[in-house]
Length: 100
Image 1: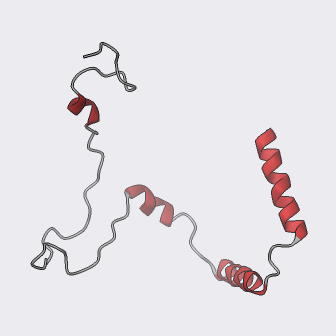
Image 2 (image 1 turned 90 degrees about the vertical axis):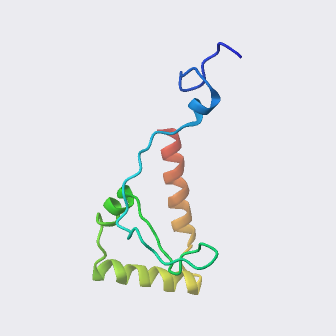
Protein backbone atom coordinates (compact mmCIF):
# COMPACT_ATOMS: atom_id res chain seq x y z
CA UNK A 1 0.00 0.00 0.00
CA UNK A 2 1.09 3.53 -0.69
CA UNK A 3 1.54 6.23 1.94
CA UNK A 4 0.06 8.80 -0.43
CA UNK A 5 -3.24 10.24 0.83
CA UNK A 6 -6.20 10.38 -1.52
CA UNK A 7 -7.63 13.62 -2.87
CA UNK A 8 -9.77 14.20 0.23
CA UNK A 9 -6.68 13.86 2.39
CA UNK A 10 -7.89 10.69 4.09
CA UNK A 11 -5.84 7.57 4.54
CA UNK A 12 -7.09 4.10 5.07
CA UNK A 13 -8.81 1.33 3.21
CA UNK A 14 -10.38 1.94 -0.18
CA UNK A 15 -13.79 1.08 1.28
CA UNK A 16 -13.44 3.88 3.84
CA UNK A 17 -12.44 6.35 1.12
CA UNK A 18 -15.41 5.45 -1.05
CA UNK A 19 -18.06 5.96 1.61
CA UNK A 20 -20.09 9.13 1.27
CA UNK A 21 -21.57 10.93 4.25
CA UNK A 22 -25.31 10.52 4.57
CA UNK A 23 -26.70 13.91 3.55
CA UNK A 24 -30.05 12.74 2.29
CA UNK A 25 -33.25 14.07 3.73
CA UNK A 26 -36.25 11.98 4.54
CA UNK A 27 -38.86 11.95 1.83
CA UNK A 28 -42.57 12.48 2.40
CA UNK A 29 -43.28 9.33 0.38
CA UNK A 30 -45.31 6.73 2.24
CA UNK A 31 -43.24 3.92 3.70
CA UNK A 32 -45.56 1.17 2.48
CA UNK A 33 -46.13 0.94 -1.26
CA UNK A 34 -47.68 -1.82 -3.29
CA UNK A 35 -45.28 -3.89 -5.35
CA UNK A 36 -45.85 -6.47 -8.04
CA UNK A 37 -44.32 -9.94 -8.01
CA UNK A 38 -41.04 -8.56 -9.39
CA UNK A 39 -40.67 -5.99 -6.61
CA UNK A 40 -41.65 -3.04 -8.78
CA UNK A 41 -43.92 -0.38 -7.37
CA UNK A 42 -47.31 -0.13 -9.00
CA UNK A 43 -47.25 3.68 -9.03
CA UNK A 44 -44.73 6.09 -10.48
CA UNK A 45 -43.03 8.35 -7.97
CA UNK A 46 -40.85 11.43 -8.27
CA UNK A 47 -38.78 12.76 -5.41
CA UNK A 48 -37.42 16.31 -5.37
CA UNK A 49 -34.46 17.34 -3.27
CA UNK A 50 -34.87 20.05 -0.66
CA UNK A 51 -32.87 22.40 -2.88
CA UNK A 52 -35.17 21.75 -5.86
CA UNK A 53 -38.21 22.40 -3.67
CA UNK A 54 -36.70 25.73 -2.58
CA UNK A 55 -35.94 26.75 -6.17
CA UNK A 56 -39.43 25.80 -7.33
CA UNK A 57 -40.94 28.52 -5.19
CA UNK A 58 -38.59 31.32 -6.19
CA UNK A 59 -40.26 32.57 -9.34
CA UNK A 60 -43.95 31.84 -9.63
CA UNK A 61 -45.34 32.19 -13.12
CA UNK A 62 -47.56 35.12 -13.84
CA UNK A 63 -49.91 35.82 -16.72
CA UNK A 64 -47.23 38.09 -18.22
CA UNK A 65 -44.59 35.38 -18.16
CA UNK A 66 -47.03 32.86 -19.65
CA UNK A 67 -47.81 35.33 -22.46
CA UNK A 68 -44.10 35.92 -23.07
CA UNK A 69 -43.45 32.17 -23.22
CA UNK A 70 -46.31 31.71 -25.70
CA UNK A 71 -44.97 34.56 -27.88
CA UNK A 72 -41.46 33.11 -27.93
CA UNK A 73 -42.78 29.61 -28.72
CA UNK A 74 -44.79 30.97 -31.66
CA UNK A 75 -41.75 32.93 -32.93
CA UNK A 76 -39.59 29.79 -32.73
CA UNK A 77 -42.25 27.77 -34.58
CA UNK A 78 -42.46 30.46 -37.29
CA UNK A 79 -38.67 30.66 -37.59
CA UNK A 80 -38.55 34.36 -36.69
CA UNK A 81 -37.01 34.13 -33.21
CA UNK A 82 -33.34 33.78 -34.18
CA UNK A 83 -32.66 37.11 -35.87
CA UNK A 84 -29.19 38.40 -36.76
CA UNK A 85 -29.53 41.13 -34.12
CA UNK A 86 -30.46 38.63 -31.39
CA UNK A 87 -27.58 36.28 -32.29
CA UNK A 88 -25.11 39.19 -32.44
CA UNK A 89 -26.23 40.43 -29.01
CA UNK A 90 -25.86 36.93 -27.54
CA UNK A 91 -22.36 36.55 -29.00
CA UNK A 92 -21.37 39.98 -27.65
CA UNK A 93 -22.60 39.02 -24.16
CA UNK A 94 -20.65 35.75 -24.28
CA UNK A 95 -17.46 37.54 -25.34
CA UNK A 96 -17.92 40.16 -22.60
CA UNK A 97 -18.46 37.39 -20.04
CA UNK A 98 -15.32 35.52 -21.12
CA UNK A 99 -13.18 38.67 -21.10
CA UNK A 100 -14.43 39.94 -17.74
